[in-house]
Length: 403
Length: 62
Image 1 (spheres, rainbow over the protein chains, first blue to last red):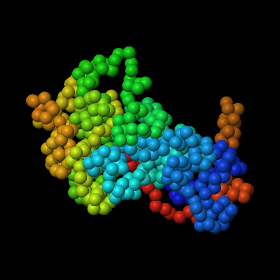
Image 2: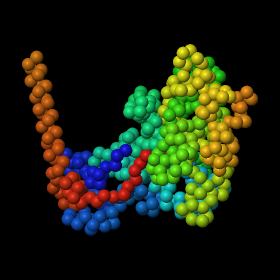
Image 3: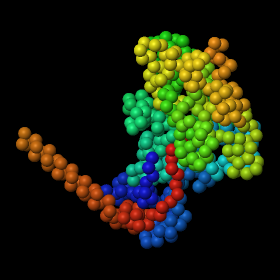
Image 4: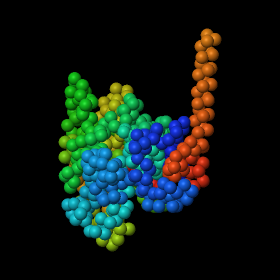
């Protein structure tokens, strides 16, 4: 999304109101300095007025790490502040878990101190504070009031959710009229993020911090949770479901292959000066591979995305982090759930009366093999990632005639 | 028919006037209190003069 001008980010539009208290209850009950600090008696000196300013009072570490202004000092939202402190959006447990596993240890605290410091300095900027969802465009997405510092109980989809989740969610979910790319059918049916991703999923604190990530999480949404539970069971809705329901995740068939993967943005931005990276990384695709998350889904096959991590990705954190010690133990093609679902995709196309197997099954010599993750493909593009992905390539798990 | 046109026309004029008042109010500082924070942050012209360009994230993650 286009960033706001600096003045727009902090402008409170009174309109025809007489005071800020008419915008929102909180602004009537508290003064600015109650939450933000600073000096409210400095009318004509910006620097002095901003002495001791707390830009985002809902940031936990600015107080004592346990509370923020929404709960602690004002004693208003203590329960939710206490709960949210350990949530996925605040703590990024999944990221920490993967960093730990790639360093060959069980939890983030067991990683080398240098690695923890490096991670905290770079990766945690994406965590979401209360204000990131309920007041402003998130800190990591450029900042700025959405509606004059009004506290919004329900986050705004475009200014909050997809401001951060832009590359792999927004582009897929909304589609693109210019390129003819179709959006997700749920978006066309006027569903928004919060129809599937509940308040509880956003706020609930994690207790099993070593084993929880966004897919291995009992509050994560599922297709059959309240929807797609018609009288005819989904498993026997048609011959394709009868044949494949147990073995394939829904996304394998119903995600459009024009999926916007991580590379879609990284190649265009900070890595655009790396010709090798650019040449090797397609910007749009997923691959069908073996499901790396049996704890999340019982399906044998799942959609996978290529993540931008190399053995030396953390080298700027210092010599201890220069070569990720257990790089080969974790796949770089990860489980993904593209948000571009349609009933009919390139893989379920039955135009002309052909069965969709003609559009999907990876017969020898068929173009359909491009949809699947083969060892040779990884070897040809990223030779040092072959071992890391040995458990998700399909080479040894296809029917003998297709290998 | 004339009444309808007159009514719609009146509504259009009324709406235009409220928009003009809104736009006018954007640059006025209607705030009359003694809070310096509100004094500045409710005045777009004052903010334009004072707010510096800053380095902030660009979004598009995840």
